[in-house]
Length: 114
Length: 109
Image (tube, rainbow over all chains, first blue to last red):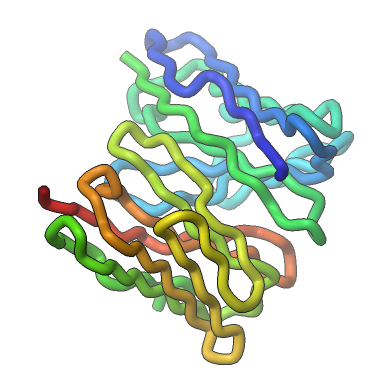
């Protein structure tokens, strides 16, 4: 079955630094990847939609200059949290797919900014 | 009203009990997902289904497209099943996924 690898599974970084999270489809090509985040005790919320080779579409309220998304190939999308602050501490998860064949979730990344 | 509603929000049961978690949605979907989230946050995708029923080990997921309802069942529950179970739907119009708020399940030994 389709497998999505998300890395790292957890990361701790200092305030002001940048963190990159990778989402990789291992055995299929993903034309679309979605990035979500989950604050404590809340639902997962969509941050942005990433289509291979084009700019990501961000949801309202998500700063595109802070959360940089790159989907340079059909198997890899990255989310970079720039100049991270403690309030960015959250659980980030991606899903990847090709629309008609459904979407597969990564296992998520827990980011803690100290 | 949320487009994806789960019930119950919290559930505590004794080991061995049969567990049912329900999910109702109000949008047109191409697929419904059941996810399991452990305390550390890690997500495991349990099922993706668009019709009928799927079974994997002690887990069973059903969906009724006409009634816009899905259920996740756990047979012979075990303390290691304790987790948050999340229902999510892939929306027909744009493939985006809408998540339910989750059901926190606690199985007592």
